[in-house]
Length: 411
Image (tube, rainbow, N blue to C red; front, top):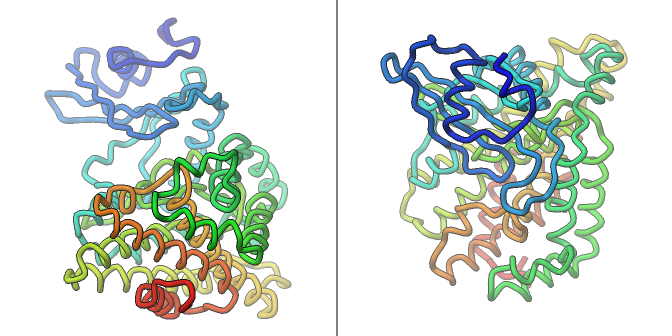
């Protein structure tokens, strides 16, 4: 290996070009390469390297020691976690994740398949595009990567080793603050700069003053921190799903750890509500998109439940776990968790640091307030009623009721 890369440093474009040629050896020695930075996140640096003559390309993702925006220190181990989980997911669901070429523990650099032919799902939905296969594909990815990594299937000793390997202290700490604390307590007094002007009283009434809601979020927070159920992605929002008419690729599992299955499933469903709410308020005449997004929400929930049920019978062999009393309880808990975590994802993206473009990009102040209130109320319903709602259509119906009333006193 080139001695330049025997100690970690943050690579610039020219460094990446040399690294791809000299360390990864993906291209020939005489290849003329171009490099561009394609990442827009706050945690890592992502580069695309391509060869002019052949068009061959790959992606290099490097971890740095601090957050880009704040300078907050971060453990470089997170990039190894991402490399390892992509390898595992590549075996469990090979059609749905990019292939891994190499992971460099010194440079904390992950080299992998270039998926430029797929587009960011969040941005595509903002453009009003529809994808009939989305529910089918994402439900298969979720079930195929989650259920096989539980104690119901894995050898107990190996599973415990994986729990240790994927202990992700710093990134879990971020989620515990931003998802399960800040939106309900004005954590560290920062929400005065985060809550949209005009919604302060609404947020205080709906979130800060609702003791029942806090108790339910506390249960979800406790499960997130202590229920090492399955190897989850940990940040599965619509910006981590890339899509085209052929299928999907799921990326960026740097928040991966052993946690509740419903957290991943709920994050997917919660993010679909952002696209649904955005179009419902800004383009209500777009019946094609609204019909598709509603059907996709319904199908995602129902397909995940049905596919878990079928896969469970195929891969769970321990007699006690095959009894209906246990199986029904287990699946019900997953699906209730799913709705609860969909609710916390929705709320934290409205009242929190990590907002989504479907909300923050709305220029009409009145419409943005309406959208935010509908989303907050939806999140509350999903959290509080997670044990009662059991069908995708019930979820959609509750959302329609919220949009129709839009006032707390009428809920």
